[in-house]
Length: 545
Image (tube, rainbow, N blue to C red; front, side, top):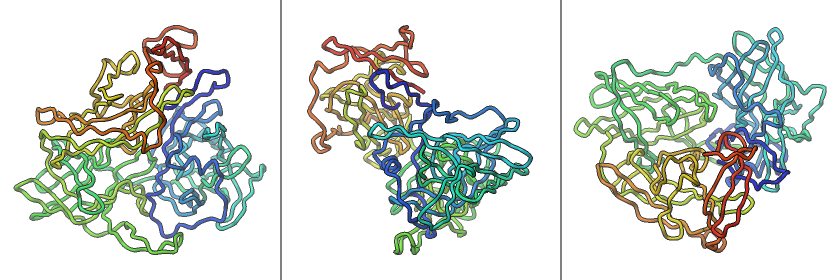
């Protein structure tokens, strides 16, 4: 869910999609170079950690839903990319992004045309012979904290790497690709760039773009094998900082390790046992990930000191390796462990990691009772009158105080407001089927209860208060155990004074744009009416995806 605006005549905007923020901080390339060009202020704001989520507007002609036609994710992209990092425009090679295409007659649609900017939109090209031409078109829309709405466009600019200026001539704004045997190669010189409505370059774009047909295949689990649940522990230091669930299956001396990239469907790695050791067959293609729009691979890795021109210093850097990745096996406990590094990587030519699994320990999962570690607050946005809501955001350590992994399906949380357990009422939170005081950890309606990309939980509230606490509840092993209560420190976070009781919400109702009462908010626009404890009403126009 995103912010609501007070209902006024000036706020007839549409939100069709929310884009991921880039993960370019996970790029480790010694070849990256800083360009002597200024970064537009609007883009600097957008990429700060406190920046709001990206808003896409269909009113601007941006294609945010997949077009009809024959779709494919089997193209493997590479380019020289321009992107923003550390407050600069950076140039570096880019590799492994998905060429996600749809072909319909003489139209070819390409998803997310900039390899290192998540526009979450499509561009439309016209096929004539063996050439696809993409004319300038809108790809992205954003409203700044100052209320300035800007639409950004894909178009060609003329720029030579290392130069301090560029041009955007109107007579050569098209971007053309050679289209043969299903592959695409950019034949236009210059940069396929993202610019604003004044043709100012944002710093994002690509040149020398090639999409080749992918020949790598994912691994599937043999028929008849039933995987068992295991727990994976790992970190950059001692295998204790991070934990997640995974699957392991065995067929004689062949092991299958699955779902180490969560939320991406089936992804398996095979290993062969000799004696007390299992050697993984690496590298292994794990599949296309449509969240980050990259092809994922598992590689053995090493850590090495590498000189970075960008920083003029030596930096400890993960490197893709060809060395064997070996897990030692303890048959008595079922535990498998390694002293090496496993890299879950985007692409196969350079390090752009999703996760660094250092010194992993894999243990059979046991459903045990245990006191959960307390959650912790990560963000807080106080109630704001113009939006009609605020939110709290918190994260969990998925282990008990004894270090045992907790089954996410048996984990819950309670929110405390003004010292009392808060009851989420289905009359207010329309996607609930019953009133809740204990919210399942896995519950996500992408509206009032929103799981963020980092795994933290964001919960929206509609009353003016700033007194919050959160508690984890674990029901594993047939018992119910609770964590210590964690209080939001509003004073330390420089939050305003508590709200009065008259500012509490008494009830909520939804109406369509014709004034008909709705049992729950529908997709698109509707009207939300909050009745306060003092009898006054507040009206909001809201949009739901």
